[in-house]
Length: 238
Image (tube, rainbow, N blue to C red; front, side, top):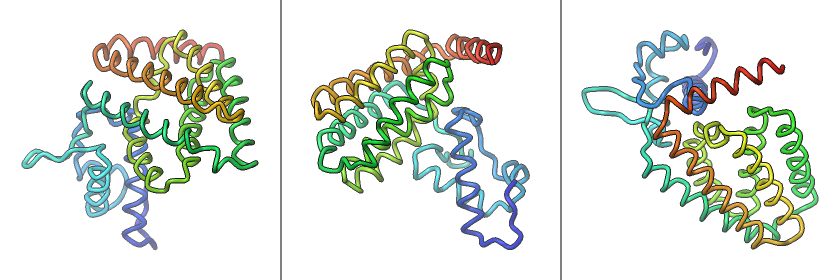
């Protein structure tokens, strides 16, 4: 998958890092899974050195944990971890929305309007995967509108952790329906200058998402089955 021929080691390391990060964020590499250097090197067709370096980068992101004399494992998140992560998101995104007007240009207004249309279209089509992509893009735009580069850097690290849980925060039809109203409400609030309304709506949205993720951690098998049924229904409709 990753070729060493004609490439410098740092490039290979970055490619491996991106691949493994994506596999963790999509759940292809499950929480608690042992990441064996030899096995990963064989699968990705690279030497063990870039694997080792990529795992160090993932550890710095908080996505994997190294246990002495045991190895490196995909990080397992507790309910307390999720509480802390979403407390941080509330603080970050509330600050970003509050400061958004000073950085709201024609381009970002258009971007927000496009996201609004996409939320409604993907919700109407029950296209959960595309909806989640727009969800991720909107929240990243909110952070960028803060104009604070340190906040952007901190959010990117936090978002790498959150990404693997987004699917489970929208597992029920009721939550999916609520979410589209929340997202469009946040967008409308920013575009019209009703910032406190946007902050309050986004706060509610994040707390409800957090609760659903905690439900997933408590009932992994039940939620996985519900997700499987939903996937099957989407494929049937397709």
